[in-house]
Amino acid sequence: MDISYWIMSIKSEVPSSWEHGDDCCSWERITCDNSTRRILRLDLSQIYQSNSAYGSDGSTSVEEEAPCWNLNMTIFSSFRELQLLDFSGNYACLQNFNGLQGLRKLKYLNLRDNTFIGSIPVSISKLVSLEVINLSGNNTSGALQNTGFKNLRNLRELHLGSNQLSGSLPASVFALPCLEYLDLSENLFQGHIPINSSWKCSSMLQTIRLSENMLSATGNLFGGGFDGMDFSYSSHYDLQGFTFTTKGNPYIYGRNFFMLMSGIDLSANMLSGEIPLEIGNLSHIKSLNLSNNFFTGSIPATFANLSQIESLDLSENRLNGSIPWQLTRLSSLEVFSVAYNNLSGCLLDWPVWRIWHGQLQREQQP
Image 1 (cartoon, helix red, strand yellow):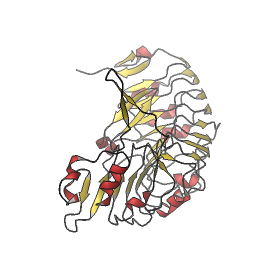
Image 2: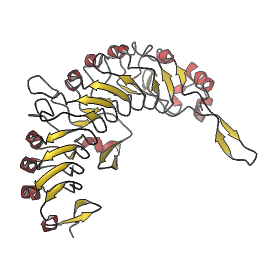
Image 3: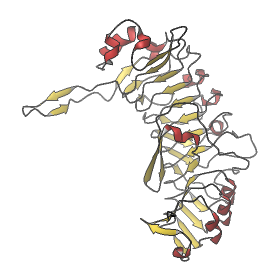
Image 4: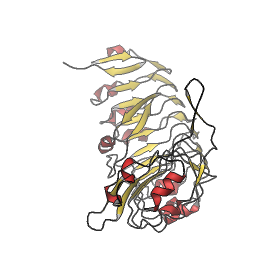
C-alpha cells in the first residue's frame, strides 16, 4: 500500500500495525468492505509529527517549521470505494480537491485544522456525493457566493467555522435541501441571515452557528423568519463531538448528542434592533444564544412558546423592561442568562430558580 510509504515521507508516524503484514484491512485506522476488501474508511487524523530538538538539559523543544507542508490529494485518488476520509489536524497546505472528484462514494470529508491557500476552491462543486464536510480552522478567506457549495445537494453538515471568510451570507447555502447542521462561526461575515419564507429554505436545517462574526442587521434580522422550520436533529455519522457556546462557557457534546441537539448561536456579533418576535416560533429548539450583541427593547413574550428550550442566553445586550412572567412556564429551561442588560423585576421570585455565576439556573429537585 503506497500510502504507508508516503506517510513516512512527510514526517508522520505510521501506526504500528501498518508495519506488520500486507493485509491493509487489518491495520489500524482503516475499515474495509468484508466482501470486496476495498477500503471504505481512512482515518489519517493528526498523523503529522513535528520535529523535536533536545537541549543540553534534556528538555524537548519543537523546531521551527514552515507554516504548513504541501499536500497533493491525488494520493487518495485510487481509493475508489472510499466513503470516509479524515485528514484533520495535520496542518497541511491544501491547494484544491484534485484527486477526490473521482471518489463517487465519498460521503464524509474532514480536513479540519489544515490550511487552504486563499479561498475555497471552486472544484468543491464536483464532490457531489458528500454528506458531511469539515473545513473548520483552515484559515481560508474570501466570499462563499461562488464557491460551488450550491451543487452539493446531498450535504447534511457543513463546518466552516474558525476561518477568515467574509462578505454576506449566501442564501444558496441555507437553501441546500438536505442541510441539517451549519457552522459559519468565527468568521468575518456581515449583513443579515438569508432565511426567507419567500423562497424554499431547507426544512431540514436544524442547527445554525453564526457566533463571532460581524453580522449587523437591524430589524429584519432573518430576512423573512423561520416559519415552519423543524428543529429536531439527527446525524448518521460518527463525529467526534462539538462545542456549543453559551455566554463564554463552552459545552462540549459527544457524538451521541447529535441525536438530541438543536440550536442557534448568534453570539458576539453586531446585531441590533429589537429581537424578532418570530424566534418564538422555534418550539423545538433546545439552545438559543443571542448574547454579546446590541439588541434593544424588551424580551419578546413569544419566547414562552420555546417549549423545549434548555439554555437561553440573552446577556450583554441593551435590553430593557421587565422579564416576561410567561417564561416561568418553560419547564425544560435549565440555564437562563440575562446579565448585563437593563432589565427590571425580581428574578428571585421565580419558583425553583437560583442565581449562579450571573445566570439563572434551575434548582435540582429532590
